[in-house]
Length: 321
Image (tube, rainbow, N blue to C red; front, side, top):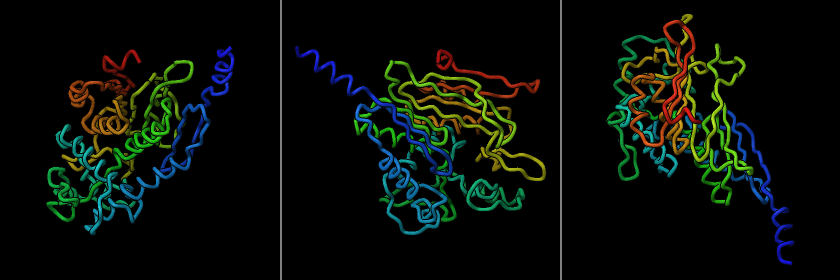
């Protein structure tokens, strides 16, 4: 007799598909999760976005990072410290091709809240002297800079970090099957009720920033972060020439190579975010050495070959996905 009510109870508590969507951090977010109580976590998610904006958003004048960049006295919160430490780790791994002190160059090229400026090689060389992750550290709860004019920029990892924080929040509520997408920085955990994995699309490189989106490749993911960084939508035009948003800290100039996008799979979204940015600065050949040296990390590259045609390359562990 006891099996009947247990069976009925299990039917009543079948996981419900919940979707949260909106705008945040200058982009979109889309969160899908399964919950047998059909709970709406929008308020909690919004609070995470708000806290991260107040900490590391360069477009929020009162944020911790803006105060640090202005050399104001400010208490560093855990969000800022997390982003700083992750960025420094990525910088060390890449030998400085990823550098969180890139902000002066990002600003002058026009990829920030500030307007771009007329550029000269002398100006760029001068700003390059401010870009070196080895000249900044956290000591006794304060940011210590070798030069007060140094400025931080965590935009290359902030959205991946946000996806991870939202994922941790959902798990704290007992939600174990979810897909968090913040501006294309994705964290997948578990899968769908039928046991199938999450499926995400890798975009085909577009001609312009406002071109229609076309899926190049579909990928199955489970318990992974996946992030694509590309040069084809984020760019500025100067004197008729298009410049990528990926700036090489070693030269001070936007990169010029044949790599159009890099998609990285890692354990977390923030680490996939950092590695995808590293790939876009270093290019495919050099970044592959880093990707192949890391356990559980895979990559998928889209590039232009010598004939001007789109070509792809996937690491061995990426291909089965």
